[in-house]
Amino acid sequence: MTALLFVLFFLFMLLGVPIAVSIGASTMAALYFQGVPLMVVTQQMFQGINSFALVAVPMFILAGDLMAQGKVSEKLVNFADSLFGFLKGGLSIVAVLAGMFFAAISGSGAATTAAVGSSLVPELRKKGYDPAAAASLIAAAGTIGVVIPPSVPMIIYAVIAQQSVSKLFLNGFIPGLIMGLGLMTIAITQAYRRNYPRGTALSLATIWRTLKSASWGLMTPVIILGGIFSGIFTPSEAAVVAVNYALLVSLFIYRDLKLPDIYRILIRSAITTAVIMFVIATSAVLSWTLSSWQIPGAIAESVLSLSTDPYIIMLLVVGIILLTGVFIETASALIILTPVLLPLVLQLGIDPIHFGLIIVVGLAIGMITPPVAINLYVASSVTGLPLERITRAIVPYLLGLITVLLLVVYIPIFLGISG
Amino acid sequence: MLGMLKRTERAIDAIMQPIVFAAMVALIVVITLQIISRVFFTAVGWTEEVARFLLVWITFMAATLAFQRGRHIAVSFVVNALPVRIRQVARILAVAIALGFMIALVLIGYRYTQVQSFQTSASLGWSMTYVYSIIPVCGALMSWYAFVDLVELVAEGPDFAETGSDISDPPP
Image 1 (cartoon, one colour):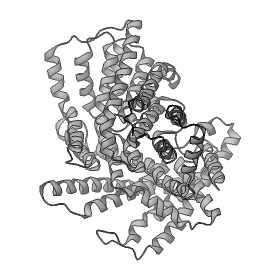
Image 2 (cartoon, each protein chain N blue to C red):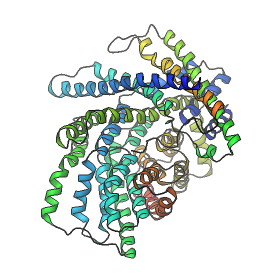
Image 3 (spheres, rainbow over the protein chains, first blue to last red):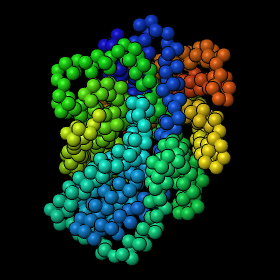
Image 4 (cartoon, each protein chain N blue to C red):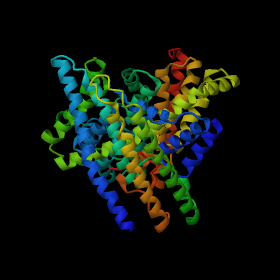
């Protein structure tokens, strides 16, 4: 029955059936042949999404969309430029830093890439930066969007793995910071090789002026994360606070969005949400079925019969995560992989929060590995460059981020702080 | 004939959009209310339940919008690499599978609302029949969209109806 389920699932998926339907239809077929009453399908679909923690998903998507469409990203870029623009190749550092700022507002990689890309690409062009390299750097910096909190994938992981969203958020800062520093290092090396120009001179007056005008955007993470970590709000409530704040700023302070824009953005965010949530719904039926057949335990057991060395097994796990990220979009990959891999890594003594960071960083890297690479698509549509050129330029950044992922996996194991 | 079918799709979509918008606004308002009442007054119990149900409703209703726009995530690069004739067969099969799943969802979902009719929600005492009914209703809408896609694919060839896209966010 397990074989039937997986054969149908892969067959449907390769035929181009939406992943949510591929999961639902293959599971339903297997349950039907097993003689299980099919009402479990609707029951589990409902249970899978009837969760208050998941309310944070549409709200963080909406807050990010509202901020990305308005002037907030432009002001963040200006502030980052006043800090580091004076360095050789400084705009590359600005791209990464602005990505990190925006990551603290938005929970999605695509929104981060779009926000930084649309405000920085014209400037990069003007200063004579190689456009493909700049676009790929912005796409790579966009991956930080889901690592520095808030993060939609972290919320989804937390719900599936029954972990605390706040704890995952709190532990996302350091990996996000290392990703940013890694990308900056690579970008600076390239800047010296290509002899990129210096930008605006360093001036305290400019820093103060841009800081003041960016302060509405910079306040967002203070409100969201401060609210969550001080225990005033739950993450779902904080997401709604962020939405209200973004609406207030864009309607009354920057006045960059009008009511028709708000209508359009709300519908767009609802669609993005539904696409993710519908996969969560049908996957809930799949995980119910697999665990009733005791499959995840069996997989863990057979892998551990090969080796119980956490260094080797984690290398295998990282390989599976990266490979899945090449072919499948982040949220779906997360929903499919977590129930299967989590029992395995728990038996190795890996902390579930630590594994959450590993899988989120690993799948974030999947956002820049084609054919399924959302950040490259966004970077391509923002710059108008063909996907192939951006893809060739992504290689050094990709290698840098994989190095960071291995650090995120092995340093806590080496130090013995993982579980 | 096909033109008329496409018009029904657009008409349904035009009705669903404002409902989804209203549900999103309601979600924001309900949780804002929850925060305000807890921080400044006393916590109210029903907001969390309403928020959960709104999330379920938004998921199914906006899933119909996503279905109509071909936005559900699918692995399309394999099918796109196939020669035209085989591609058409693959697309037709894919839409037929989606149609089958949606019809099953309507039938099972309807039975589920009937079986659960005695059940009421924990905090507001709403009949769960109404809450669950979103599943067969939206399943029916998506069945209709899939049916129109099927007709379109057979009539016009493989490159007209989109079954899905590789990525979750539409480019801005």
